[in-house]
Image (cartoon, rainbow, N blue to C red; front, side, top):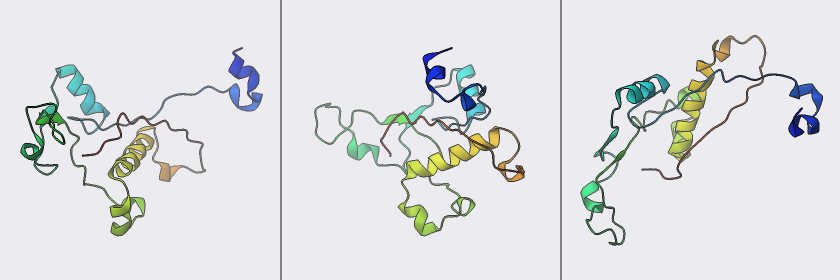
Length: 142
């Protein structure tokens, strides 16, 4: 028995767990299946800065020490960052505009993970315990 099992109440610690649903959005892949394809094919998902993100030429400078400038015109970008279905989540357009775009992506991806886990949540006969873990590798948004 591990130290954690000794410290925790016995009611919940004797149960197994399983990862039954997962989801992700990364550059070049809108979901886990597409990401697997990217990995298998060895595709490079770095691209030029999309015009709807920012004007790369305005911020580019060869000089890495130039204040307020960047030294590249390329990066990894996820697609369709504005395509959020506010009504699906019961949010008004006004509320959606106040939510951080990263939070909107988190809502969508979390729901995809629940859907991926098996029967659609609206078909559950009774509430079920759900544990989720989120990894967000950066705090920047562009």
